[in-house]
Length: 154
Image (tube, rainbow, N blue to C red; front, side, top):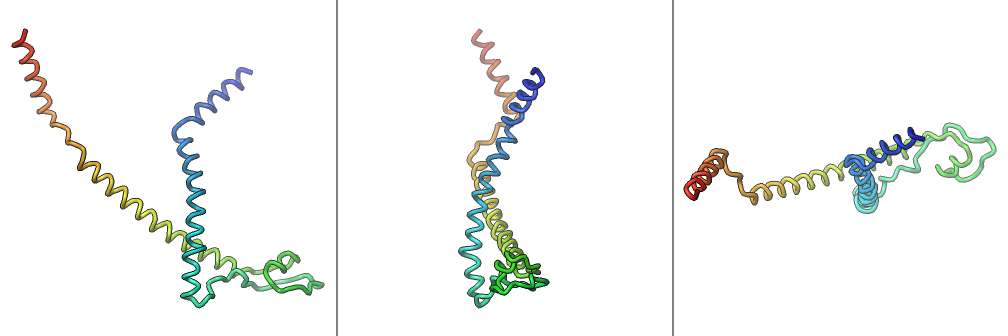
């Protein structure tokens, strides 16, 4: 029983450390941010890319049938053939996912660049607003002056 209490206290100390809490917050914010970026790519960037490419940027239904059940006579779509147990070389789905990744990485690159620029600008403003600390010799001279004043009063 004592070892369980020891493990629980160790776990509690580990769980409330700043790094673990920061990691949890980062994961939660990252999941929400992922949805925002995914929506940006899917709903804004990809339609523009489709217009530029003439509506041909969705390759998700492009595939080569390597083998299919002999008795299958249904639709020849990726979803139907996959469900029927056909072996498919789904090059189009891979290409679509790769294109989404490249666009997502590009969007994240620009977002991080913008945040870094804003952070740098904020840090520069903060440095400019903060008064400079007095030099060490000024501090020592001030202390000496205060001691001399104290001696004169006594």
